[in-house]
Length: 230
Length: 289
Image (tube, rainbow over all chains, first blue to last red; front, side, top):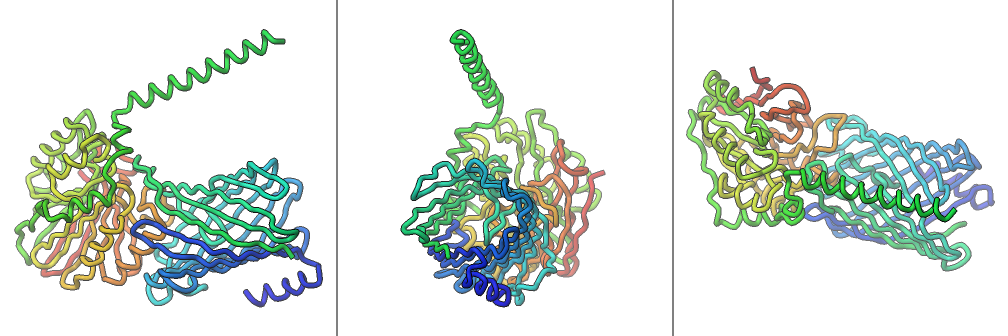
């Protein structure tokens, strides 16, 4: 990943690529499953007008300590006025205490923002890993591998000069891709502190059990941090 | 202009009224007690009830320890016509010398008291001892959990058969396991003296193109699968999906054990038949004749 990011960072330094990066702290909890603090760093780079690259690392504290997730995505802009892009992303997630991990490959067709809305549909191939090789970034053969559909529909319903709010449903973000038995909801927002510096926050949850008629909110994730645009 | 706008406003009001009326009709025609579903005891509350020590745990059935057979299936899901395929299954029990059987929840469709009485009678007529656990449909009425535990006992418990096989029944009726049950489950799994089978309503893995009827949380599924592998569990047996599926992840078999319901999502009524000979366990997937 470093080999790819280094030239892009150099491009950004000489002004040829649009780069934004963020750092956040947060909490993720699921009753009876895990309860941990998160430390997240992310970067978005546009080296060319038709190319977007995103990457991130997420670290766990207090449970499943250490690296929690890594992600790298590349998007080709197909039709800029509608924000239409085809995005390929690789995700790795691991739970060190459980000796379990998962590698994922996502293909998403994304559109927006258009009138405040952004949307996406796609597929993910997930390869869960258990035992000694749970941490491997290259373990793509798994007895428990499966295909899942992915979807996203979000609405930026407030956009002011210095702040904005957005809410919607999204089965995937940079580090996660949910399975069909969850219905994930999220809200996020930002407040511009200075010309290139923004406070950002995100809250997410998922309704589970609805396939059996016994729906409940299960997981919760809250993060807050700062984003800097170079 | 104003009369056109007033008439379109009346039409909009009429459409809203019709929508509310239709929604009311749909909800009132549903046999499920929606308030009871919303206010049901959570899996955490049910498990604490189970493990309080006040509920008698089902004991081991007596079998020939050197050779015995048992069947596992889900979802008889008796509805208001009281029909199921348990009568046909009863003939299999006699023909194949099945010593006992396990039912993985959804005993009834709507959990009404008449359905509960009917399934209790039908299970009794099969002609072999049985174990049960709870499914989501068993919680669709007020007092459903109280009735279930009165009729069948706990929804999470472990029982050792012939000093060889440990059956660990889990309550996943809500699609999750919950903290107390997970701790208890983990301690039961760590017992290395037996071949261990987990029996519950929801599958944790059911093949490469899953639908939404599985244990709900991805992290919980990863945690469960890691524990199953680490502790050498033989199989995770589930119902919920009215079908018969057989997958293997590492050393663990993931079986969706068929259903005895009249209305099936996939295939024919079916069950999984386990045979234990001299401590060695094997299984076959059986479609009901």
